[in-house]
Image (cartoon, rainbow over all chains, first blue to last red; front, top):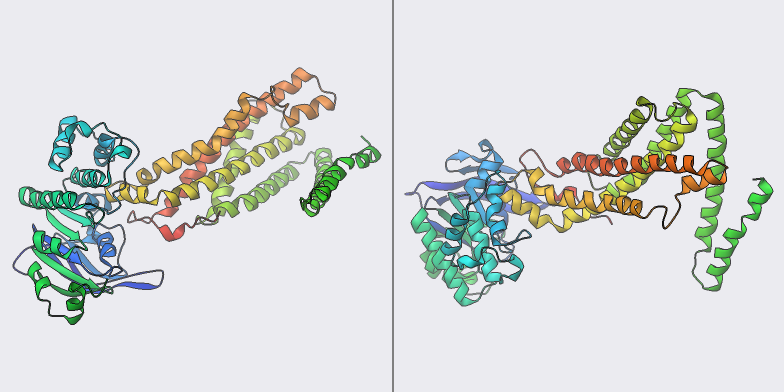
Length: 242
Length: 255
């Protein structure tokens, strides 16, 4: 991965919560402009790593660099605009699809034009006439697509996706996989994607990180999942560790 | 009223005791404690007030108000124990309310600067402020706990702590002040306010009693809204650090 510029770099990062050592000595980097998948059993610390990347939490010690600049040197608001995150739960604010799409700009006292909002809906594969539909009337998959579109409003340079397809049917999963590949291709956005679906990691990701028990155990091109060196990872890819 | 007639009124304590016993409600102990406490507390307050009114010394008035604020803070802080530094936030709120209301009343010569007016009005204002503080803190802690995903969503999209907490703050302020506003809409129709009734029984002119009651009602409107807003704006910053991170461990619903 060293040939690429790095989007995010970790140097001996540790993080604990409630006395639990969740991330242990994380060192490594995510290459800029690529799709890196983050795989590993539940409780490996993948989601926690995301909250450190956009400054929702700070590590106990160690250094994190975002686009070669130390995370502490960013204003938290600017950092979070630059490093967008879409969550598995796809939380919606009360109102319709437009209210949700407008939220990132409303926070900056600006307003999203209807045309741009429709473009975003189209990009994520939602019909334009959904713009004024109450989010309560959208399916889980549609809310997930809307959540991704909302994250894109800030035009993030780095996009963190936390298990965004885990609750979706196969067709919606494929739609989102194509969408993410398209966003990466068109906008050259760096994408870091937590997924439980190893086939998805192989199909969409350029690189992969395997995390276990708070540690990064193996990194490299996604193909590593086909023939891992680490024995624990071998058990994991065979489905012997959940 | 004499002590003899007062002792006869204990019939009104005996009735609930008998009913509680008959229907196995288990309220006897609490009823007896409540009756004894109210007799001791109110009589003590009565004698203290008599002493303060007779002496007309400002220091006693201030001491009475300090006592009220201390008691109100002690009572309300349990509901907001999970908010860092809640005690001083409540003290600041109660002092501010007291200064604001008395400042207007005395400054504009609406009421005389005597213990007879300052103490009962302060009692009503601080007491009401305390109830509002409890209602607000109750709602605010549960809103924040239940809407944590909304707070984190807004922060993650580049919102400030104030923006992230805005909806929960407004909901809590509204929820805590609505009962005060609503109850004033039906006042006089459904119930005669306690103070007004007391004045009329004591022989005051009913129209004068109504005018004083209106003054109190308007004061309580200000008290309600100012208490909730002030407490809200003093409380929310402690839920975040200077990196605009939500400190979820600072808040545990305790209700």
